[in-house]
Image (cartoon, rainbow, N blue to C red; front, top):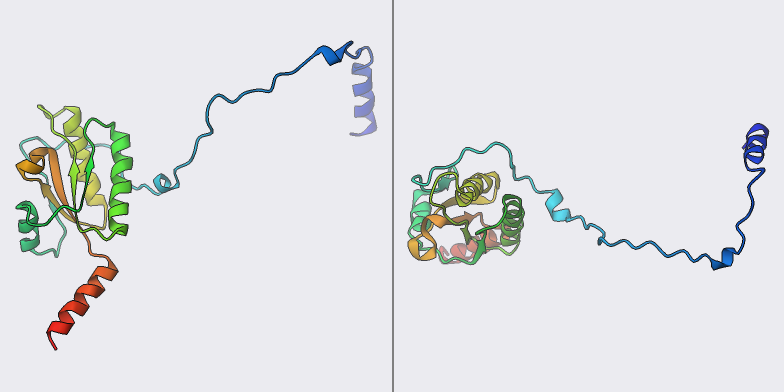
Length: 187
């Protein structure tokens, strides 16, 4: 504060009197009623898009296969020959919650070395129902994962058109174990 600022301040505060009996005043601490928001660092990396969506008609079964994946693998997946190692239920969840849950689920499945999982998205009666919107988003989101090799509509006892089987890529450790197992046979 320079000399001019100090004199202006003293002139402005010249007639101010201290509070009498200020020992009678008790200030209550302010309470923060809301819990501090925690940032989910996993969701900061969530690359799944929620932009414009082409709704997949109910009559079209969900199917996807990465280029280079053998047709026999998708045939076995479609007929339920691979055991499901985990499942995720997205029925009656908001779209954003489904996005977060699917992202976390696929990452965790990949970390755990799972190869085949079941995603239950539900089914609606008409194309614009909430369940079909979630179904359409799930179809798009699964293709955005590099680790998803294929997916298809599940068999009726696993949910039928309200669920899909998802085949995940082998981890490096699983590839090494598979190579060692088959290398021993060829000797």
